[in-house]
Every structure is written in C-alpha cells, then in structure tokens.
Length: 165
Image (cartoon, rainbow, N blue to C red; front, side, top):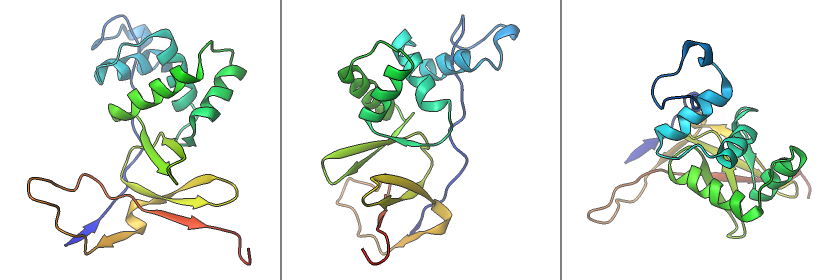
C-alpha cells in the first residue's frame, strides 16, 4: 500500500454577518463577517470570545500555536478570556476541522491553522514547528487497519536539532 500525502492551499476564510448564509453586499469581504460565517458553517455559534480568538488565530495566515501562546496574544490584544476558555475553544475548533492539533511528547500540543494534508519538522530546543509540504514526503507500506477501520490521516513529525548538538 502506497500512501502519498499531498498539500493544497490553506483553509479559506469565511464567517460573520446578519444571516448565516447570505451577507449584505456591504459586508462581503469583511474579515469579521467571514469569520462568523465560517464558525456557523461548522456548527459553532459565533460568540464574542470565539470571534476574537478566531481573529487572533487566523488573521496572520498559517501558523502553529500552543494554548499558552494564544493566551499571551489574547492578553496583549486585551481580549478578556481565561486559559481554560482558550483550551476549550482550541479543542472545539480542532473537533470541527478549523484547526489541526499536533501532540508533541504527550506534554504539549500545537494547533495548526493549516488543516491541509502536510507534515512537520519539530525544531528541538526552539520548540517550534515548520510545515513540510505533503508532496515532499511519501509514506508507503502502511499496515492494513483492523477490520471495520480505515486510515483517516498519516502524520509525520521529523525532529531537527542544530548540527553537532
């Protein structure tokens, strides 16, 4: 069995507005409106906190964050939110496919705003993730899944460290 994972463009923005499916022409292209519509499209109510955190998450393109990093960004942006709410929101966004959760060492999770098929370099010591385009890596000879199961996704994390370290 040969599984090649490919990468496509990042998730499209869409959200906000007076109605869930149709926005007044004056709001078309408004980032907040698009974000609210995006939340509604995946079954999440666009609360003030979700919209504020969504803006912090998605406004700067594809990136990898921890809950603690997002909490610090929210504090700097004066978004009144607890760390528990950050964790809940990140988990909700991951559950509906707006984010991808990457667990590292069982102690830290990163949340990726790029939900397309791709892999990661993990930079030890810097604790950072860098995308590996899916078309740059081929995964083959995967085992057959147990009866009644199917492979949902293959994730590869390649650990890096400075040479000579």
